[in-house]
Length: 451
Image (cartoon, rainbow, N blue to C red; front, side, top):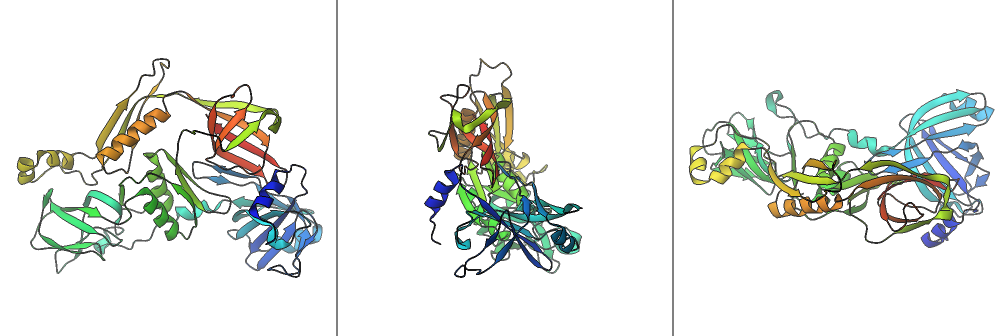
């Protein structure tokens, strides 16, 4: 590769640069190589002497958002003979890969700018065939296969991190063996009606075997993925997704599922009480960060960057008057607690009866009579961490927040970056990019800015 990343970004920043988009469209019978102009790879490229048909009329516009959804537009190919040849192929579900560079570059110097899945033929007519392109985060909607408990009792539970008072399920009719986790554990503290009972633990199997007969069993489970970063990395590894960047606090956390669950559900639950966001970036790497008020700008947009009349206020968000952050979830609240726990550990007995512990905070927002009182669920497991996060989230929402839409001429910018907009309506305010839409060939970027 002769063109460095810095040179590539400098080239992208030139609005008059001659751009060529290459598309590799996979189908059941092979790959179609097409481009927005004539192109053939060089003899010394990794894929030498590869011709790309000049058939790419329209390419996807890609929008990345902080809610985990990546949206694509369409790919349109033109040419009577080509359309006739392609319409019968099996396209749906196969990869679509887009590469951007200059017509004079070697193929190895082009950069992958997006990849998705072919959503199938949307339209075919004389001289044109159009494909819908779907984003790849749909892979995270596939349920995690943990196996099944005996006697149709449902999926083997999935415990990640520190889990309080989760149900334990009997898995052996000959012994008093109960299972609490699909994954290996560090420990399980088995309890009957909240009172600890004698048992042995098979850490690798996530099971406990009791010394005597008891009724309904629960347990406090410790599993190694006990920070937000570790859980995100586990989800990414489970689904074969690269990690593009994680910026999350090292709080002690835990989640537990005794029914079918997907990777998307885990990531969404993780972000809910951490004020975080996640998405798959343009090359399908998983990014998850905590939402922070920016201290300095990563990107500056000046008035001349913005297309005429393309700076608009799209929504406003009231500040928070009060926040109740629920944490330390009890996964099996008890109606009957063992007498010994009630007598000797009343605080523990109270916790066993209630589903959540709570951290509360309030702030003065008297200028905003419609300020909200908000409740959030969190996977946090420690009181100090919960109090810290409660105050951080309140401070983040101590004033009204606005979302502005901007259409601008810009080199690549990314969701999560801090932005300063040198325009009268936003002068002196720092914001955060919450969505970025781009057309690979037109040099035009559509932004959502949260300020």
